[in-house]
Length: 162
Image (tube, rainbow, N blue to C red):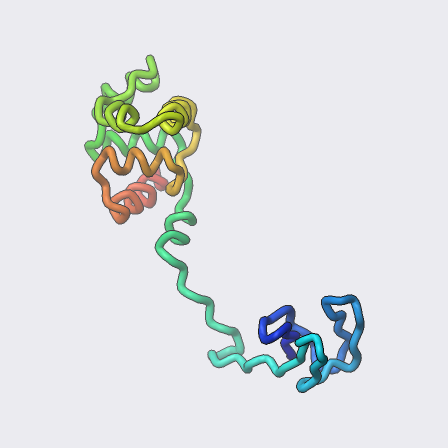
């Protein structure tokens, strides 16, 4: 396998000996390592895989990528989680469902948020059907509840099972 490079930057992978279409539309055949032109394009041998089985290692996901991959929680799962974890009482959660009354800790978080984000958060909370781990309203409520990233991650993992 070869790498087509433009001034050292990888453009695409190319099969050695085959045709390659260059970024300017020209075609080159056969594609051979060591070819270059005056525009800074070159073909170089791709590095050999270094892991067992011939596969290149995947980079470890970042904490943010792991959080983004957590399952979304339904409204029911969130409400059960709030009660089970002691972040809200059953009466508070039932009041949200019955009348839209927001628990005091959440109301305080909304009130402390500047407009228009406050209105957006209130609308999102009132109408949500699923909660995403990295949604701005989820992050606002995380801060209101005093939860660390690890605690909120655990909340999503635990209550996705409910």
